[in-house]
Length: 467
Image 1 (tube, one colour):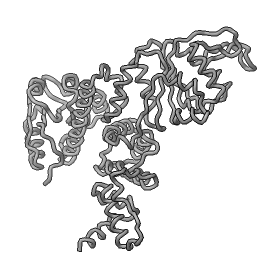
Image 2 (image 1 turned 90 degrees about the horizontal axis):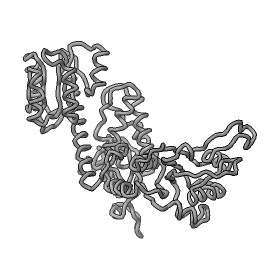
Image 3 (image 1 turned 120 degrees about the vertical axis):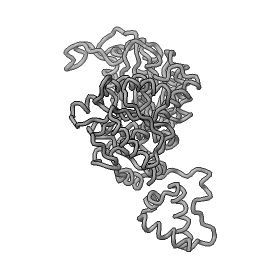
Image 4 (image 1 turned 60 degrees about the vertical axis):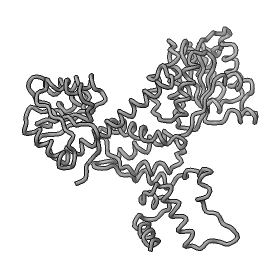
């Protein structure tokens, strides 16, 4: 029998009944997992864990001396990277929910079913590996000079380019000058804006306004507010968003869509740090920092006259470009795991297991909607999930109907080219299959999906091509 999972670290089994410890040990041994540590006295658990780096813990709930739920809290506090699976004699919902809230990853009901035991263990190993990777990433950030890595906790990444952006943000965090973030829709520009605000340690609020589609009057009223009687329906004074963000950060999303009249008002706000509520003749001062974002190229808009040059140079005192997801595919494992957990929690389901094939499949996709699209795909899949391994149907439909990843310069030799003599259909088929297998990293299911045939048809072709 093959191993259900691979781990170099020992597994810690904790139960006051020796017969249970022997049974679980035997279940693991039969699958080739022999690196097992057993503890029958709950008072010895923490000292044992201090001596060994543990893969995960199987913890009995009802024990003398230290109960399982009390010990759970101690393990979570002292060894937060180690997943804990609770073992209970009953499936009382309130007890299970209490343990999960305290930090337990999963639970198993006695008598322990071997299949359930190995499935839970496999999930625990995956979580342990992910936590280890996250710890390495945090250390890497610190090594690269990040003073406040916690400010970027919402931005899950392994990308060196993204980490360079983090360093830049730390360097200009305390500046009062405007800041512009550009990049495609769905790359996380709003999360970067929040990170800038956290890094600045400004005492005021972070206030976000999407200015796309706002005409000049609505833009002015939204940002600057109005006084009573300024126009029909203005029955009382109302402060604008710039006042709400006093001493903090005002985030203007989709600034590239601002009308020319609104651009003039924004320019004056940035230059003079003054604004006038509608209907008032008394200007007010603001110490708010302006952070803007756009999915359009402001430099190009400047050259075409759609964006004022004077505003461009004022607002782009600091700027970053956020790369699209297809240029940082190394982030996929972190993002998929993150969204799976959030979706499972929202739909009140156990986090599904995903096949390794998902990453091969997603690596072939262009992701026009970037991280936001990935999140929607995962939420849709989890909402339909019932049990077992999660279906990839939603992902296959997206990849099949979407735009493929553009070929790089290094791919040019593998693309189909025609000279003076056209290739035969057999040659075209062979080139097409070879290219699909290359892009799918030799995964036949994904390769077949890319060229619109069944896996069986592809396998038959590959077999016949060898003969």
